[in-house]
Length: 327
Image (cartoon, rainbow, N blue to C red; front, side, top):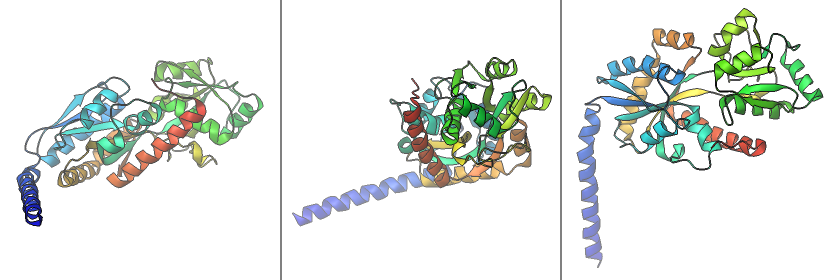
């Protein structure tokens, strides 16, 4: 019996070694054909801009074309799920915002993929700071003044969102929780409509990307009271973060990250990480991203995974407290 078991184990070991030997040359040659980069948004948006800005640099460093494949729909779920279920061979990658990695998993009870289980993080490459703004016709010129007014009349101050579970909605709820106030969220169809509502005095507060609101802040139509993200924006360098103003728990980080299907071979992931890091070192690329209101960064796989898992827990708790549910 022991002899039979020995032979079975030896056979299993031989098969395993053969499998490793079979795949090793393929990993060494990778990539030997075009690499598909899935963007779960339509062309022209922020994520698509990041993908196309980086695509050429990655192509040069990998020695193969990097083809952008826009797969929009269902709040990024369609494109993200396609990558999660793709072959883990390094030829199908994902570039998406934090919606795919942390927001959807925290807010949606039924999701066809699990980012922690089904995706292999590569790197976070850019952040898009959100900005807290008020209309020029409002009396508040500082964050403490806004908070004092909100405490005096709970839910009297309204802020624009892009719908339940959107970045501005979560950011507004985080601000309310950190400051001990109650705000009233008002959904709009998009950034432009929300900004016009604040400028026109229809509502009092907006939370939007720095790229969307900076022109209105510079023209005096909006007044910026704080950057919601982890760091100041190069577009509005004089505006302090909420953390700098005593509300570190109000930070909401919007970011873009590269990932591959889980179980992609480590040598392939290493090559990808090196290519991404080298591409992000381009001064021209960094300038291009900053011109779009983005802050270029390079955050590696381990820190990427830690941030993703931490945000899922944080946003899930927030959603439970605030009754936020995305359908």
